[in-house]
Amino acid sequence: MEEDDVTIREQNFHSQVREYIICFLLFAILYIVSYCIITRYKRKSDDQEDEDAIVNRISMYLCTFTLAVSGGAVLLLPFSIISNEILLSLPKNYYIQWLNGSLIHGLWNLVSLFSNLCLFVLMPFAFFFLESEGFAGSKKGIKSRVLETFVMLFLLALLILGIVWVASALIDNDAASMESLYDLWEFYLPYLYSCISLMGGLLLLMCTPVGLSRMFTVMGQLLVKPTILEDLDEQIYCIQLQEEALERRLNGITSNFYFHGNSQHLYKELDMIRNQRNKLERRKKASAWEKNLLYPIVMLILLAGTTISVLLVALNIVYLLVDETALPKGSTERDIGNAHLSTFGVAQAVVEIILMIYLMVSSLVGFYSLRIFQELTPRKDDTTMTTIIGCCVSILVLSSALPVMSRTLGITRFDLLGDFGRFNWLGNFYIVLSYNLLFAVVTTLCLVRKFTSAVREELLKALGLDKLNLSNSTTDTESGKHAANGHQKTLMAVNTGLQSQIIL
Image (cartoon, rainbow, N blue to C red; front, top):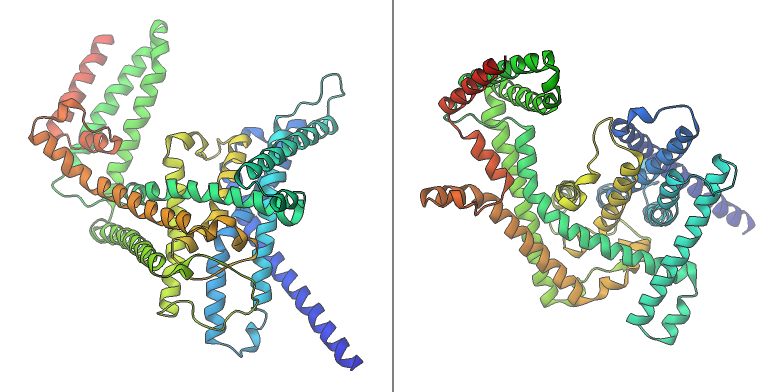
């Protein structure tokens, strides 16, 4: 019996060590990828060897850790679904015995723990540490900035704890619930994270429909559109005339000191014209299959993905109305690989994974498309650390709410594990039903507005109402500008050339 106990303890020890090594390797890969992403966008002028450089470097490492945790939160459901299908396909394979329920639950718990740590400790510390200068009268240095940062964190913790305590008392005025708030680790932090998850779900509800309609515009800018009834040679010739006229005008202004202040505006206009010429030349050099085959295929894939998402949400609404057991719930069972979680097996699991990644990308596109968050848009080699911290916090909130949103909308039937399944609002039928209805309605309206904007503009032009500015769509105005014929562009270029000759 003692030998059997030793053998069991050894097996448990080796399994724990194996799980720790796998988690470490997965997180190391995510950390390296996150570090490469942040260094690509971080402002290069910050790389100086002084006190501020050390503070920026520490803040960058914390942002990298947060971004890696965000990536882990995004990959939780896909990794769990893939593991379940692999275990069902190869149940007795010796080389995949490390892929078990204990590892999956451990990953969910670690992501939940690190999400709380990053959201409530690391990111506030990075922001206050970056903005700190030390207390007045104290000796300047890293120690004084660290002391000020910890004082600010302590005050922020008191403020947040007080707000959550008062909000809980107002919502649920019960003696048991009030006493449970004193349990910081078991109730208070999960309750606070549940509130943050609900906010993240609402943010996803606001960003994802916008991103789903915006994805068509983004892919249209990245890909080469088919050339239908367009003369690219004539357009390139007109753009070259405009570019030459602006260059002659700039040469005349630089030689005249009094007109030097207007050169900045002309330089920006010249850069825009050069970018437009590069796009036209790229369209001209593109191959026939890229213009006539790749672009329609990508657009059809985007349309199919959006349509399937809306249909799954509509089907989930029917399930919710018919059967209340369709509500998202958490699971504490450590067994995985016992049964297929989808009707069509592996094929449906692959579709679910693709849809979840597509929704996450669309939510990011929609997030940066909203006017409120456009200032957080990262720029290559020109993004401050404060902006990077804001981006990491936003991405962490969105990615932490992605598994909950995917399960709430019925994209997947995989039960939420760990603390993700302990959110209080998941069991509220009216909240879940309203969430599904809002997502389906708003996404449908965004798509209808996107695909009918061109038809609406043509009807307004036919009725002579286009001059009333009834449509405020920026994409429509841009498309109207590109629709001008070659003779009008030529006249504009000639007029610009005449103006430059008069200035000279």
